[in-house]
Each structure stands twice: as C-alpha cells, then as structure tokens.
View (tube, one colour):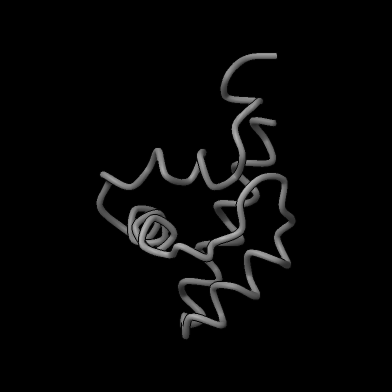
Length: 74
C-alpha cells in the first residue's frame, strides 16, 4: 500500500489547497474548519459538516466528486 492509499480524506483533500477552482476552494474550506471530521470518515459525515457551515449545492457537488476521486486511490 502506498502513501496515497494511507491518507485520510482530509489529508488527501488538503493536498489540493493550492489549486484554483472548486476543488481548491473546498480544500481551503476544510483547512479553515477546525471541526472538520478527522480520521476515517464517510461521505455523509463530511456532507453534514459542509452543510452545517452553510455550503451551497455547488460545494456539496464538489465534495461528492472529490470523495469519488479519493475512493479510487484508496
């Protein structure tokens, strides 16, 4: 198993914090959220946290797309 496969969703997502676009925006949102779920999480828990922060449907869609990408590298 390589490092990519061992990373949590949060760690994987934060690796995109420097890029422009929706994925980078989402990563920066997570970076700025001290209550974002750590460790092993599921999509629903992340979605709930994002919605609790007032995210729009575009951000939720980006989260779902990011989760799918992350799931493929695990």
